[in-house]
Amino acid sequence: MDLRPVLQVVIGSTRPGRAGAEIARWFVQVAQSHRTFSIELVDLLDVALPLLDEPNHPASGLYSHEHTRRWSAIVSRADAYVFVLPEYNHSMNAATKNALDYLHREWRHKAVGFVSYGGVAAGTRAVQVARGVVTSLSMVPVYEGVNIPFFRQFLDHDGVFVPDERIQATANSLLDSLAHWDTGLRVLRG
Image 1: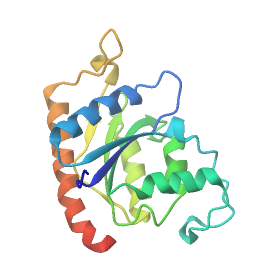
Image 2 (image 1 turned 60 degrees about the horizontal axis):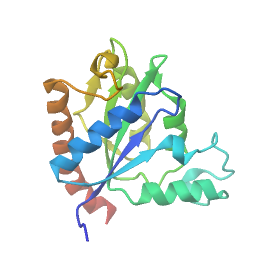
Image 3 (image 1 turned 30 degrees about the vertical axis):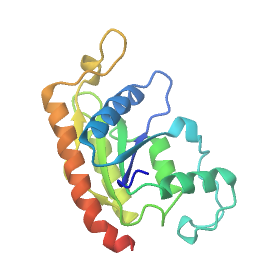
């Protein structure tokens, strides 16, 4: 039985042809090598949440739809999260925002980090928006993050993500920080 805290790596993009799935698979390998967390890969494409359709406020925990109850069970298993985010129009993508908005208490007092990708801004504007959202859910966004500029340069001819040393190093720093915060936040979660 694995007693390590659970880290969910969430693929935020649901678009056809997305690079986020490949980047997430790379990050999962880094996280497994780090050995601090038990890793779960969560793909929002598979979760398939419709646009928020719950009649009650998420803070109530009164869910009317089975898809929300399934999403709640998935999120509740984790102690920390890493969202793999694309940047769309200077912001985070809609599927990730929608997934965050569905729940409330399940996110509370958990650490969250971001692996962002895009063009010249490397997804940093998506992370800026996401930080405000997760903070309002009582999550703790860690300072360290992975920002991948011009991400296509790191995709080999088979579409596999092959990062440089800087990206690899920032991934390990992100995992160190998540582990640190998870230890402290466990007290708040009881």
